[in-house]
Image 1 (cartoon, rainbow, N blue to C red):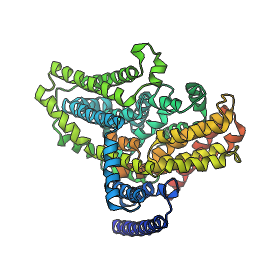
Image 2 (cartoon, rainbow, N blue to C red):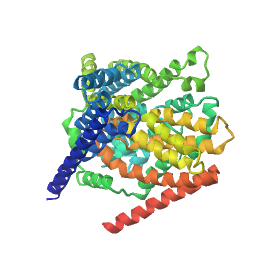
Image 3 (cartoon, rainbow, N blue to C red):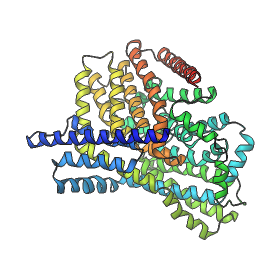
Image 4 (cartoon, rainbow, N blue to C red):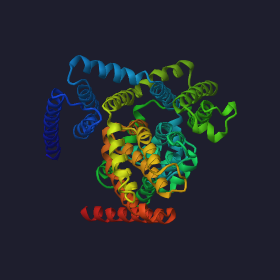
Length: 533
């Protein structure tokens, strides 16, 4: 009965949204007919809003993304059918798939899918699952191990999502942790950790957007004020040690505990290679991490004389990950052949099987990139940047909190953190000047980074969110809906912290207050959840 009621409510909500969208498109058509341009206006935000709202209501991501893309094409072309088709498929989809960065990420995904299949077929994942159950005895231990591994792989968020998922999935399955919870732990230790790691592809991106100042020094000084990233880690640890969940995540965990035999059935449905040992999982992962690090510093010029830090700052993460993952796959195949766990034919069969396992995230990524192209062509970034510049001068004390909210909204709507950095950081620098002694500038840039990561964390069209779903092998919309209340809670606390930080401007005091406030809020939620049971 409850299921029927929820289905009916979803149907009604979907119909209401579609009616509102049609009404909005009619109004937009009238404005175009009157000669008004829709670019660089609030209309530019309509396509991602359509996609996100429909995805959250219908729980179906492909059609939701495509409808958002179609709306963007119609608005851009002035409702000309031929121009809309050309813009969507040529400028949008083909343009996104011909971008060298995006192609590199897709190749990395395919190779990593093949490596995961190799490790599973060799019996390495099953062996690690047996070992971990013998050595990690509790649900809490499994979650802490996942968090620690996620924190250690701080170089790149894509790499983090897929590697942590591959390694920890057997362990979390054995301890009855839902795939939704695993996806949250992966996502929460991807971008939030990368954005406070000075040696990472994210640090390189941020420093590249700062002109007239030492970008790396600015990044390091901004770390204590990056409340969303730090409080996300605090939240994970508090939830784990306090042993509670709330919202949709609680329901997912309860459903998993009621079905303790799911992991056993999953293992029984696959043919396990009895020759496999833990080394057949650990060595490929270690080689993958090392080779990807080498690949990234190679693209940054380390072997041409650059320092290690500068090589990371100048690295091309997309190309470096392709180099590293390709080298790791070759070494893994040679290792498996030498140890006799797989034949050459078995190894080759794993490559297309791995490709198949990555089809869903590749399709979602393609749609997400195309939607971003539609949003960019409508000038959404320019519109939001203008709003920030208008409010900056008169609200300096509240500017960090305002920038945080704007960054959250922009990143959530476009699904990109790096694009948000690129828009807002130059504005902040221009407002304050490249003065490293201006604490409010440091706080404002940190608020921009925190808000960008927060929006990226919440958005169903974010590539990092998509990667986390793929790494945990969790339904994408389930991951988004279960993670959203956690991300919103952390965002609310972070916003309050930026309100008083804009005036206190003392990092250790503000950081201590933020941690205490985060823990207090979670304990209140725990008490309320327990009372409601």
